[in-house]
Length: 510
Image 1: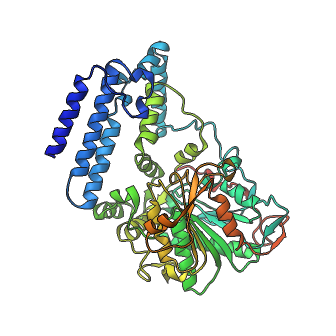
Image 2: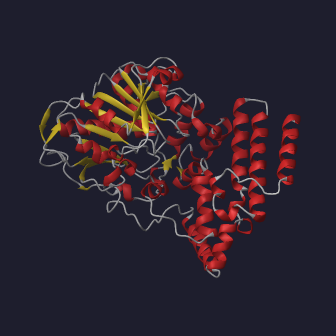
Image 3: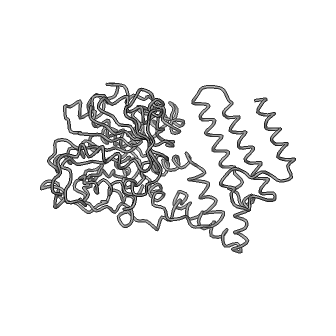
């Protein structure tokens, strides 16, 4: 620490003796109003203090998880105390206050009061979007529902389709339309356009009367029931199955339970930003310890809700500059309306979880990491062994994912015994996945095999420009089955159309 103190004092002395403060290397201070006068000094001093606070946190010795928590808390404090976050120290907000003769401040106060009523900071113009009108618009029909899910069958857009269907299972902690935002960036519409017969699980936004649902309910009455129904509607003995985030964890659990029953209903598996081995659970792992899990079990483990608003707040503070303070500055200090952005509208459309299901997931996955151990867990009445699934699997991880680190996603390749293809895309948890092929943005990495080490895989991987979507559909086409004339109508004699897509469950608010 003494070396850090000496370095800090030397840097501070240099800063104070300089005739002009250096430009702070931070996009929050990129406006020219931060480049001169006291505001420039404030930004430079803040940047210096922030740098050394983080260095001090990194220098602390001790148990690994405690050190990570200290770093996280320090980063939260540093981000909160930015001079950009306060009217008295933000020259951009002050200039706007003068230019608008106080109107910006009045509007900012109104924005803040409106957000207090909503219970969350507005990240987008929430009136600009409506589910079924301009998000979640891929044509289709709800062909099955129970008290936990609706099952959507999408309308073909090609004359001929693969006989073997594709069932998509989204994370139950969010609405399904992250995979069907708008036609321009819809993974659903893209898969349909490739000639797949696509089905989607839409999880119900559970309320108080469903507060005792368990993880097994989500596996059996959610995933397995959806798989059974898709098989019956299409007349196919096996289907292709895709899971996204915790949807992937549920899908893998369900596939293992089916294998234990001798039901070989899955032809191929796709796992997108999914954790099966929770050894490295990302920044969320910092919050999960015995005390936290025991507290949740005592309060909602026997029945109750993990409210979507609480989950959304937690996820937002994993990236506070982008998802919290950015909007405090623009919405409140500057009085600006938030822009219309489909992904952020989805992000604010939160989902409740039943307490018993949530607590079981925390304890057995995040805390005790038991899913990776053959036979340690039982679900849907069966011992769970991921190695018994034994089907070709496409595993995708995002390079900058802070929720499912790509190396943690890679560990799934060591647990699954069938042929596995691992692909890593650029960007984060959501933007890496939702990367439309036609935009030709970013890049991805592919390897010829899946060696034991993620680092070895990366050292041998080939970087490819553009979206990973074409690579996935090329892989999936091998399991599509024979091409046949697209069905004229959705569902079947037993499973008739209940309502148009996107259905009513997705419209339920937390």
